[in-house]
Length: 316
Image 1 (cartoon, rainbow, N blue to C red):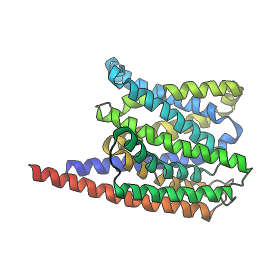
Image 2: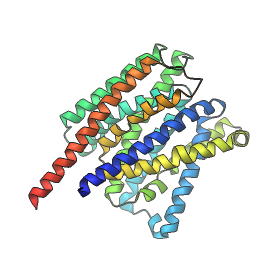
Image 3: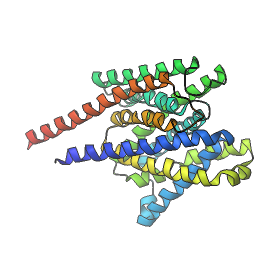
């Protein structure tokens, strides 16, 4: 088996593992977060995650912690985009069906990735990539309409609340695409996965702490919810992010965003265990549209790796 093919399989396996862990934790978190501030959970979980990856870096060598000036813009970029992605995501989970939050994010991500790459690097959009991205976007638009019509798995509190939750999901997708691009740049510059993750969460920890303080009752929320916050932080944030970073290392940014389309279908399955969420076939239909284009993207990525290998053999 070729080295290129091995990389593709390894990257895909870690991305799917990340999606599976993320899905289960999202449903559990969505149920539990009704009693606490989403910003407080974000602060605690990413503080734990930041300490974890800093510990890994310090164990390897203190030299690995240094940030060269040439990478400062990328570090600032990945910090701000990470803060935007996760804070909007966890906020949306409090008000919108988890599978829909994930699906809207993923549906927006691929098109956002293509647009950002076009604007920043001036690269031409691959027509097939654009077609896949637009297909996923259609699935997201279907879910947005279903939510506003009250056809999702969670009863609609009000139109303004639903719009706020959906806007947060859209913002999450755009910021996630930005984060994947900055992460890929650092990975290409030979930054290890743990080093990228060690320097990725300064902004989100600071911003979520500030918003948590504004809402108050920090110690009361921590004393009543510390156990599940710890479990979800480790299994639903730290591990999935590490697996995702490894996947980003081996796969291109567009494929990363499309492979994450497995999250909504996994989430929908986990939702069957949550009595708070009813089964919505409207939600399932939109999710399946996105999943269909995701599977097509997986096949396309495999074909591209085969073509790269073929060209390398010709050059030898």
